[in-house]
Picture 1 (cartoon, rainbow, N blue to C red):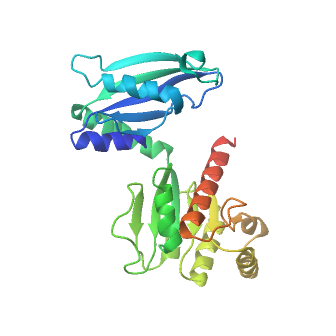
Picture 2 (tube, rainbow, N blue to C red):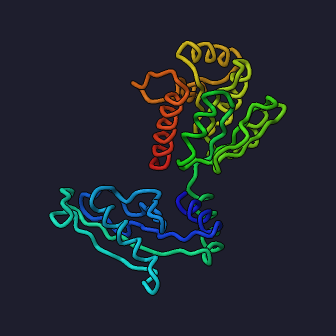
Picture 3 (cartoon, rainbow, N blue to C red):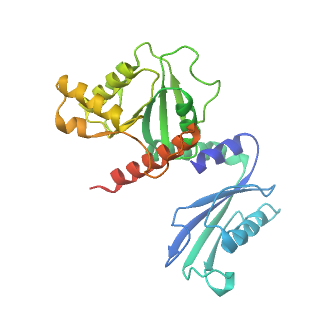
Length: 273
């Protein structure tokens, strides 16, 4: 995702230094592969761990913009008394300056990263929570197919990781989804929610979530049982969706809780053999 931002910056004529954790040993604030972008203006995106380490990294990154300076360098940082940090580990950071001349190469790398690392999510419903959720997911590793059949339901603009679709029959979209797709349902219609959830569970997709209460889940389970959906399929329904203990009803709070639950489900699937 950071490469996608870098590609966008280069395409507009900006240069940036890509700072990446090349190696992390012992107790460290970030893992190998963590990265940030530093612009000549001093602005930056991402983080390699914060604190004195990041302050030093930002200062060093800005020196790469100076004429005649090396475009690539590596520095080792012991996280002890030298940086007044008590982590006790050691991090090696790699700094690389990218200019608009690198735009095509970076865009190709960003496309490969985007295709390989994002989890596909089919989000049904463009109401208040749906809109808040796509904003919450904008910086996260998801590729969102946002589906709502109502004319004019979508905002004029959406984050770069979101594609908006307005089919006449939203439930029919389930058949075309990849097996590893996450499905999250929050339409304006309970009958439509039921149709989408039933088809998604019948397909054994990676994750099927439904906005609502335990009461809504019980009603849906009863109707799906009557329709012949197996016990095993029904038990895979995640409803309510979110992190226990976050009880706010505002769309942004609900969306934050859902985004955290989706990340947790994503990590669980990626680490399960």
